[in-house]
Length: 81
Image (cartoon, rainbow, N blue to C red):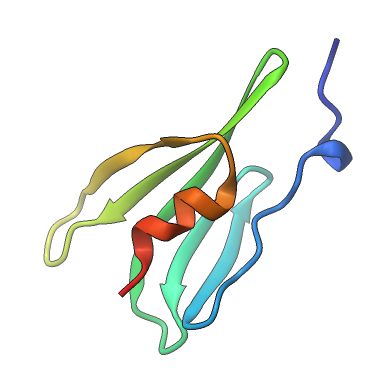
């Protein structure tokens, strides 16, 4: 059974965190001052959906995978100050 885009819960921003949609299933996670914290990806695999969190490595051109989560709230907890 295919998953429809409108059926997938979009992540919600939190106090101090802003989400900038980069593509259909990818968001840049920033502080409200614009500092990039990392990225959030939605992974749709058959009937399951997960959110993958990646932390931007300061002063480098890379990201550190933080894990995959069943909901966006848990994934965004990785970016709390």
